[in-house]
Length: 312
Image 1 (cartoon, rainbow, N blue to C red):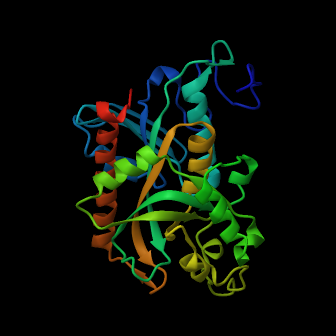
Image 2: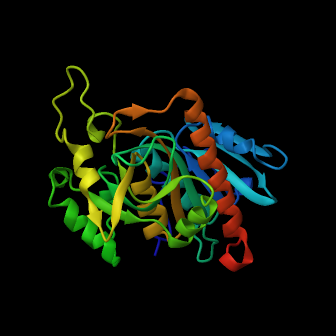
């Protein structure tokens, strides 16, 4: 249960209800169907598929929000910037935007849950997953320390087995956690990917791009876990393997999904094969991201169907 009142230094919000980082307020009427992307430019790649273009836009720092409709479904796309720390800021402020009454300075007892899909880019530790593929996340490994500030005791058997497997490896040095995507979102993304080359499994989320993902660069080559990608490639829990590495899903699943109970998932373009040391060419980069966007949009359409029980 959320506390009834909160001080202005804890949740920084202006007199008209504008949130400090996102720059959004409840009267903006942001749709309940939300895409989260790291790259601010990617919100406009999503918006090009809107029925009538962008009908609302707000920019503040790296946080850009655009709204429109896709096949008459209200859609918002919000950029988080890079990393789990940025993702935490967006997650908490979306929570406040959806559930906090700034006039009464109290938390609402009734609110509509959100449908949230992260559309991102990633690399894969698996030799057989070609660059240019799509990866849909069922679970996320948190190699960051942001998620551990939000304790959550999962009852999911796979999460428990995954944590046990992680703690038998060198990854135990960074105290990893594991979080789970919403199964309704996972199934919608899988349906949306049927005509595309995709993989479903575990996503590894790191707090940085270089050493936290096992990259050894120049005079910064002395890193904590140099064989990180090999460790990830060998994890197998109930037949589920680590299919990709990125930097946001673990926190998004933990906060927005597991704790708040929103429907949350992720689909990422696989741009690199870390096992083979390969990275996609520029044209394929754009094509892979576009495939992920189109799959995400179709998944939102599936979620909006009466049989899926999604509301607005």
